[in-house]
Image 1 (cartoon, rainbow, N blue to C red):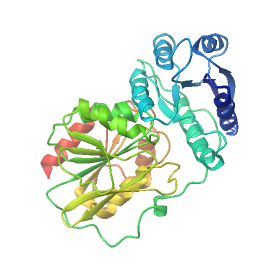
Image 2: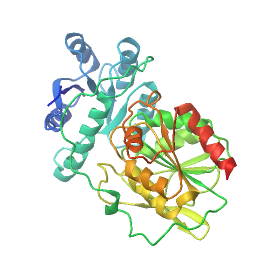
Image 3: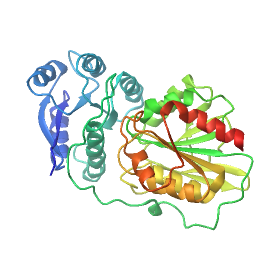
Image 4: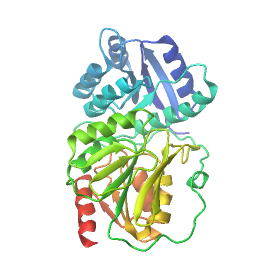
Length: 362
């Protein structure tokens, strides 16, 4: 067993502090070193003992979580995971937190809901472990991975994908860009999409985010980028100049009917410990689009998307991985590279250029 990830929980609700403590303490790679009911108590705890990761409530007395987050990032950057209720209004605030330097988002566990708690508890622990490996602050100095617990058993995308119907259809004039990202992906996606013109190829994205937050994320990007961006709905057509983002807590598959590509949005089990799963999108793209697709895997912890990218590569798609230097967490790209499914490894600021170059080549 390696060194445990030391976590400080900041929340004004005693019941939430207790539940989060129980969830995190159940993971052998995590140790809760303390709790605080507001940022002032938390500041004193941090002076005494610096945690590896902080979970931070948004709404608290005396000082709100966003203000405290900005102070942490300005004075002593520590990986911060924002914790919020599952509301549309809260999702807008949490996007501000991600802009201010938060690593990721978790939803407050529903106390007493055993089935929900088991699944949400898995995500909470995964996010905290990802945060512990994140590169934060202006220097983006790499953090040494901590914690030595074995990963939990995972379902593959076969649990969601329909049986294959044969080879992908022949090359068409349009290509579809399939993108997967996790920890650090919200800001990385913004940077990439802001560089693309309004007539860029159609893009479908899986970003690991909780339910409710993907709609607000899509609206934010739509206001910043030239392309039209929305949260995907079942049956949406993939069109040039448009971006579809998988809704939180739903898988998204790429399908084809004649010359038309569209997405199928469905429920299902966690795949690679995620819903939506990058593997589900990538493997469906390999089957439905083949060489008409382009795969892009970006910052994030774990191996979600690695198998799917390998299948896209084998089906003739061009595959791109974000490089280590520009990744907040070089987990998902690293695993995809290790499987041999990546054609090119490029910095974040060159991914948009690769997409446009491939479009011109076609």
